[in-house]
Image 1 (cartoon, helix red, strand yellow):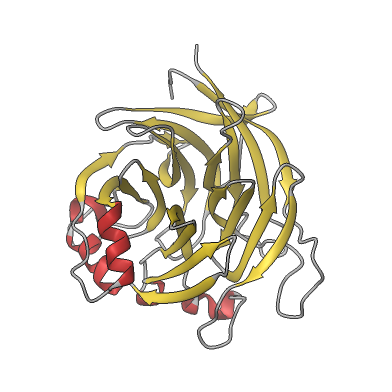
Image 2: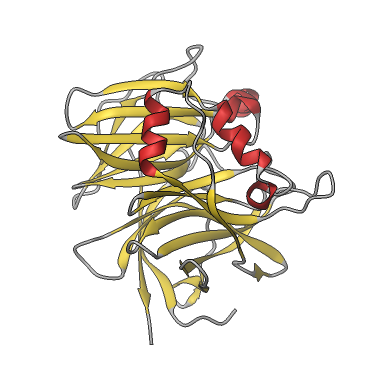
Length: 316
């Protein structure tokens, strides 16, 4: 794969909680599936655990915040995998004097069509789930976005738009092929819908197929993105040999992409001069150091701590 730039992982940090242990919380972050930066904190959502990891910068100490449960389960082991909300994307936006943080289910099954809304981050936090089924119905109806199987993996605010990322790691179905795509919604419309879900869901705008490429015969598929500016995204893609959107598979590599409205360029992620083999599922930029940021990994192993990685990209 040729690219106009290069990208590498420069450091790894296992995410171990520093606050007192809890009987209903593992000692480490199990699966990093979405990453949001707010001021001097990184928020790590997990796709199999209703605990939010809060990483303080620059010390990288990790504390936990219990998320509201539905049915009392906070940790979704294999026996409960079908019940997990599968939070795979998240975004934050200024909300009054504080922040609103929204984590989105992947939509790949009916139980994964919920959003977690956290209001007044850094203030008197309130947390609530909303049924986002009408929103996902819109995504499924746009097969130029969802393809054969919907798998919403990322969300990022870019200017006045919310950009959604569809991961095309599914299987062909009903004459449709898996597709990687981005689409937009107006942020103001999304926020209005969150506050009143009886409103019609916002329409999808500017749907575009994306083509991250392949590694060792395995399709690279979108997992998250961060906004470089009002027009450009820095996107992640992972090459995972999964049979569908439900099952995990072997990961053979990952890539970083620069995406504009009409163009995209991809670079295979490296580490110590070799191809980086890991599944990065969340990305955040470091505004203080140009062309650097963090990605969070999902090892698909509940006994291994998820890792927060520093990365850098270079242009010729």
